[in-house]
Image (cartoon, rainbow, N blue to C red; front, side, top):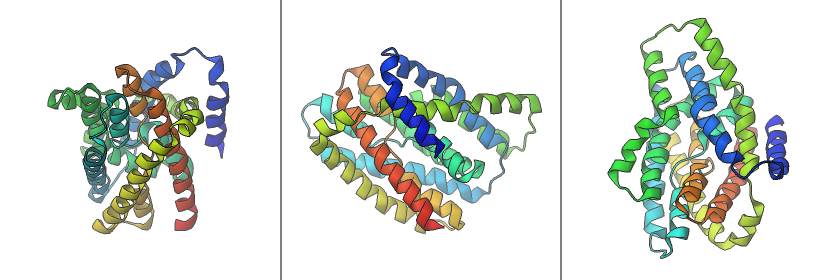
Length: 286
């Protein structure tokens, strides 16, 4: 599929770019293309109240995973190792992975599903995750309300619920910007892939990720059984807790001087595993 080609381009050409290219492109995605994708998808779609099951799943999945993460790994003495592992249990890579992948596999309707999942998910990534990385407590959690994609998500959801009709020029502009999102996101996925770090720290990564995916599988089964949804929505909901670790695991680790290679390895491992799970589920569910 096309997205694998873009990932390979990002992986094979990263040596041609400056060291801070990934950080710059990430800021471009976070501040422009991702908010545009969220805005366009939510303001041009209509959804039933039952879809908020995805938001509940986003909150529940994160709460369970981070609780077990603390229970199992908080005793690691070295914060350079402990915190990247804990961060890998906080949040899922929806915006920088699942939005463009879901749209390419199933169309815009699935983006709405994962945007609503991201409503709960983003609170943990940019609130709880940032608080863990900075060790700032509750004040750090409140910073989520300054994060552009989360703010746009709330605004778009409100406009949709109020049935506000937006000018076509605004929607066309949002669509133009969001069309750049898929390429930039998959390029970044490839850019941040680091198989060397996976092999060097394989035992630690394998233990952490195996724990996370076993827990996530049981969460997936539970949330699907909790809500009455269509078969397509059930598939989307089942996959949501099985998405890869958030890119912010690496971003926070770099910013705060934690083990960035370990963070990169955790993201790479989970991206490969989640991609295989998504494609296999898509094939078998139909």
